[in-house]
Structures are given as structure tokens and as C-alpha cells.
Amino acid sequence: MINKRLLIKNLLAHNDENSFYDKKLLLDLSHKEGKAKFLKHICALSNSNPANNSYIVIGVDDMNNEVLGVDFFDDSKLQNLVNAYLENAPIIQYENIPFPHLPAGKVIGLVTIRAQKGLTALRKNIWKYYGGSVFFRDGSISMPKVFDIEINDVNSAIVQQIEKQSSNNIELTLDHVVEFMTRKQRGLETHYKVFKEQFVICWSGKLKQVNKEQYYSRVDIELVNEQVRLFYSALDEVQISYDEDSFSILEFVELGIGKHQKYHPLERQTLRFLPNGTYQLETKILFNPPYYDRRSLHHIYNSNLYLLRKLESGQEFTTRELKDFQSLPETMLICKFNNIGEPIVKMKNHKAGFKKYPKAYRAYKESLRILRKVKYNS
Image (cartoon, rainbow, N blue to C red; front, side, top):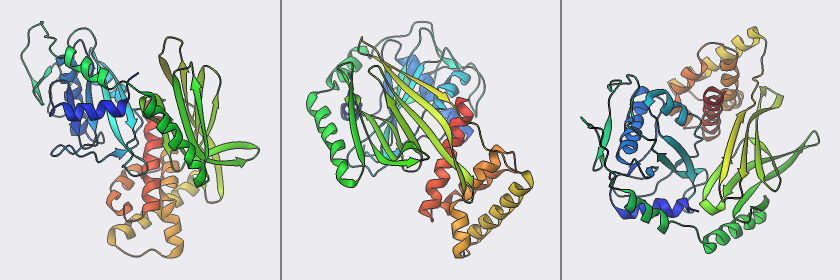
């Protein structure tokens, strides 16, 4: 088994960006240019590495290799995006890798690219790249090239050696289990479970009872063997279940207007562990959005627009307005699900203003995460 944290360290230590790995400070898929550049790199790495994995490391300063981190990110979008725009698309996997020195909620993103047999090309136009374009890696740069059908395999031995050096060890596994168990001192429930004598999952969270149902909040779940964070949220509630062969995370989102809040199942993730030392991850969206009286929602939407205008002009909120602003991302998300106005666009236009209010900014990011999951996994 590969320890993904060690793998990232070995990639960063091996060399500067090259024909089998790339590094980025962040991954921005919110606009065409960001998507196009990401697809270009996926295409180039796939074509330049037909017989071995290739990697993109996200959250690293390109200039000095400093590990800075990015927000926890679920990969709802990525495989769908790659399949939609690339012919003979590779299989990609995005994993969130925790590093001890990073703040809570920050991780390093690791994209693993497994090429399929044959050439990968753009299926259709995106940004300034034309459909049919083919990219290869030229050192650290992804370049369009005229090609023949012969694709050279030059990196397999190097990548295999790096992956071998990144194999897991007992010390790292035990250290991480012990670290999780010490979280009891912070008032968190902590557990670990061993599957098939090989895989160790640790989880921690704040346990609470609602209508005879148990939920975890402030949840952190890791597959310790590979140093992969499976789930992290400071806001949402989850239910955890497991047997000898599988581990399941049922994520809920609490939505409502005012005091009328309700838990809505959002997504179930199930890891199934196989006897041959592998596992499969199954994901299923369960979300049914809440619907409300449209007249009431139009009133809430217009009130939210007023708060955004005050935010933009730099005016101070009253105590009541500040409370309403902190719940604005949630009510805008409800408006979105009920097809009221353009709530997400309006919020994104004021992203910089949200950052001045930490609680509201966390809710803003959470609302976009929920929307992304529903949109791309449904």
C-alpha cells in the first residue's frame, strides 16, 4: 500500500515538475480557463505516461516547493469533467492528504492519473483549445504536439521506484492511530477499525442525539494506511456504520428557514474492502431539496440582496442583520433549489466581502460544496 503523504514528499523531493508530475498552488474550476488548463495537463500527463501513473500535487508553492495546503475538496466534478471533454479519457482520482503542520480543514490535493490504452485528445473546444488537440509533456510544460502513433514509455522505472519508496510502514500507521485517540481529551468521540487485517480507518467527532438518532459533527475520517482523509467537515452531520467488509458514511445537511431546520440526507459513501488487498468506493447522492412557498422565498431573496448591497458598500450590519447575513448562504441555497432568482451568482460576486465574516464565509463555502455535489453526482 502506498502512503500518499510519503508519495507527495518523494515527488517534491525527486525533481522539479517533469513529464510524470505537475504541481499547482490551487485548482480553480469555477471558469472555462481554469477547466481548460486542468484538462490540458490531464491530457498531457496521460499521453506522456502510457504505462505508469502520473500525478498532480495541489497546494504547493511553485517557486519554493512550500507545502501551503488547500481546502478539503471532494472530487464530484473531476471525472465527469474529464469524461465530457477528453477522448479516451484516463481514470483520475482526487485524494485529500493531511499534513500535520497545516491548519484544520487544509490538506494537499493529490490527483492520480491512470492512462487508458491509446491516445488522449480534447473531444471538443474549450477556452482557446480546439477539439482534437493532443498534448504531451515537454519537461515541466504541457504542449500541443504533432504526433505519430508511437508513444514512448520513458518514466515507468522512475515512477515505480518513487511509489516503492512511498510504501506504508507500521510506525506511521501506529503514530496516526495514537494521534486520533488523543482527541478524546478534546471532548471528541474517537474510534478505529481494522478491515481485512490490512486497512485501518480512524474517525473522530462530536456525538449528539437528535430524535433518538445519533449524529457526528466536527467529523474527521481517515484511511490511515494511505494517509488519505476520506471526510472532513466542521458543519455537517454524519452517521457512521460498518461491518467486517465495509465502512459507510451517510452525510446529512441541515437546511431550513429560521428555527424550522431539518436534516436532509445528502450522500452515502461506502468503502468495500476486498480480500485481495484492494477496496472500492461507492458514492450515491440521496438529496431531495426542501421546497417552500415561492412568495415567502422571493421576500427572503430580496432581503438577502439588500444585505449583499450593504456588504458591498461597506456599511455596518445591525445585530439582527448580522445574524441574517450569517445564514444568508443557507437561505440562498434554498432559493437556488427552488429556482428563485440568481442566488449563487449573487453570492459569488461578493466572495471577497464574505471573507470578512468567518462564520458566514464558512457557510458560503459549504453551500457551494453541497451544490457541487448535488449538481455533478446526481
